[in-house]
Image (tube, rainbow, N blue to C red; front, top):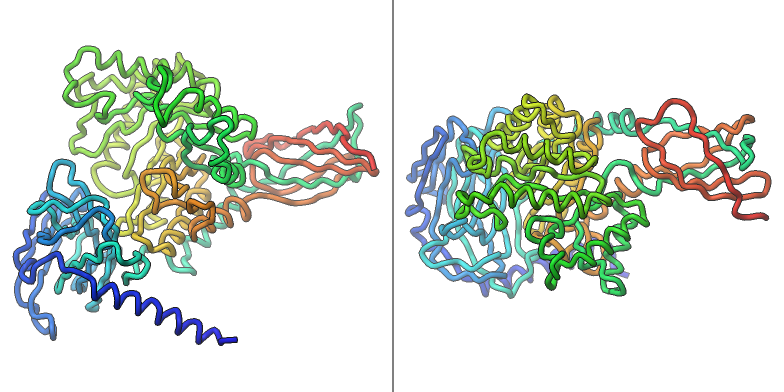
Length: 604
């Protein structure tokens, strides 16, 4: 038998050989003069960029020095754009390589930024994205990605986006090679990404775990009674948490619950094992709901939505209602119809229909989705329908449903205008006497924009000061194949959110590789096997935070145990008899013991 060292050497040799073969077949897609021809732009930051000699840098005589003295409102406030001049097709494996160092890092963070390879056409469609972090030493940075779209000749650029932090960087020797489809992404080299707080011994994590014990675990009391109301002294109780009260979950598609369709059995079984809540990805959205009720298409039919809802009801899996009204312009309320006098009626008509059809089975509703959007200043339907439109939406929704109403927005943890606009929007609703019941925070991250867990907690405190009920409603992380980074960030954001007393849930927007807009972000592969981030989910949500304990009642039939809140399967044994009981034990349960009547289902 070979030693572990031999296996390690063989593995490294295999990877090196694969990359060597890939390098032989690679084609450069930028010219030798591309770096010197790059364009440097500044929007709302204070920054300078110069190309020229890099004094005292052996072998690297020329490059860009980019000095951001004051950060802008967004990453692309400071950009260095390098034109591509070679072909890239959708699905090609591309490797970006460059050298960089931080002459002056940010005063309170890590130097670096985002790399976006995009077509400079409407919407800036991305071929790929990646992030990098650097220190004061010259480092080689490798960023691989699979191209999502084809490069358009004369329009495709590699853009360094550096506007979100004050720093002074130097960048040199930029190379972009297209390996086409002859190489796996895993065979290409990649640079390590650091985010503050990733360290194994990070102090914030120790504090957060202690807060979980304080805020999420409590002592429950059960007074065990027989069918005549008499206590069961010294009964043995196994208490197993069957379904978290906290909404741990992800998106679903109604079509995967077609009656009699067994192709998605593993998908459904995974939900049953690991989730306490789901949210329809598209089935209840404006347009899709109306289509499904009028006959549907290959992907949405009301019968499938009902089947999914019934499946969840039978298993006590909560369903979030996504969504009633969107602030941003979309296919249902497109910008070119913004002056249509029926716009308001069409938006509210969907809200009424959703409340009628989904109200009986949903746990809560996203009453306003993307109320501020991504523009500065905001360009939303409220701009046309009046500043009081969102207030009107919430007030009318109160008359349609008794379910909690949530507001939901993206990029809330990132500093800048979107976070501030969202905060102001919620404050305006409070001032108008139309408060939402909860604040939903989306998180669609890429490796170069990972927010430190301590910043996640700080921003959470800020929003909880408005409404003390928060939820991470849409979570996915793209890392260009760096599955360890993906797993670590999920671990840390799960711990941070569960440790904060305001949070009510954490939902993945992509969790299954075969479903969702970003397959790479999934927890589980198409065959149901778990990825490293799936292992994190299982170990935390389904194991560490899922109580399974045994206790014995006292002489008065009182049993006590500590655990996480939710629906429990109780197995009770007393004098040779066994009973199985389900009982909900909420986090906000009264201090008095819950009375549980035991009906025996087995005699020994």
